Image (cartoon, rainbow, N blue to C red; front, top):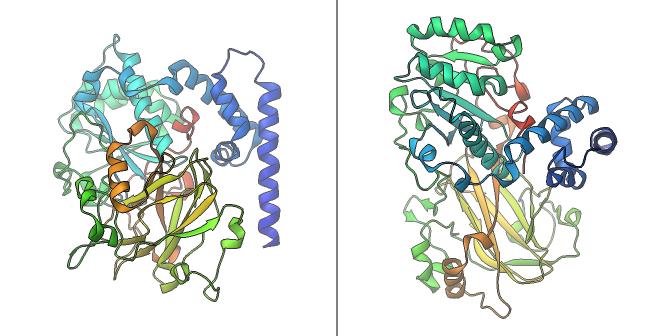
Length: 473
């Protein structure tokens, strides 16, 4: 414990040193960076720590990375980049999109290579198009790497030259089933690139890619079973649904009281009773670290307690990033703590991408100003948690004296504008004893060479290189 304390102190020291070094040595010209990025860096220790992590806690390297990142962000106007600022026809093509997860729980960033052609007139818009998708992901899952997948099906030489020209220098990637006729083009492109860029390129057949991405997230032509077909609008997103059990949909007490919420369909409901465990805001997080012998609300007994917190505009959410599950009975229940930091009552609800696995109590309720709510998330039956599983916490301020019963909440969520909703995503962490051991096919290129976070390089994560430009939001 003492060693951990010293380590944390060292990290905090490096965070402060990084802030000061960047401020003193780089922030001189007022117009050099977007002031919003500079302000956030000084206020957000987690952001600074992310840069330090990506540069192995070298302050000098982290500061240089921040400089590169902020310059690039201003050049592309990333803080103001919106869906409407990208030509609609680009989204309609489906040339680039986020969908599915690899076996280690990282989002898949798909490039349909046949849809990319070299065109000097649109190259800047195409770069912004790619940047939009990456920034969108960075806001939703801060600091998490991506797995970039190039789908080479039906592509030609003009396609492959175009795609490498504007992406290869900035990201690791896996290229699936490159046609043999493209080998000549690759030899030409290879001469344009430096050793670092070349090292980021890996090639795999459709049989080899299945060692890293389950068939459920691979298209049929890659030997997968994913029926997903891109269409626009809207932009594709994770599918958060109502949980089910062996005997059909789980019905909560809220559903028994009112059917008005049925039209929402996809919200996560609980099979438990719907009372809310409320604590005063002044109670510290450390005081909530109960063990199995603690007295009090038996509903939270045995649940893994969060140690980190995301500070939102309406609610602070603990944990900040992930829920940890394992095989042991003591590892099958986690706690989400919501702390209302606003001046008004806040309605909240929780959804999941794996509705058949989890039960949540409460999943749809409200929290008074200055109060906190304990939400228990437990694995259902014999199910095991997966790195691909996600949770979405949604929150919105309610008017004074607004009702907090089931009918009122159902109507509230129908009427509240999307712009008024705060959402925060949580991923699942599977404890080491439960993680599957991946076997690497013999034909893979460098299958065991360590990449970011110790992942094999064939599993092409975009952890540091893209985040040079697209820092987590």
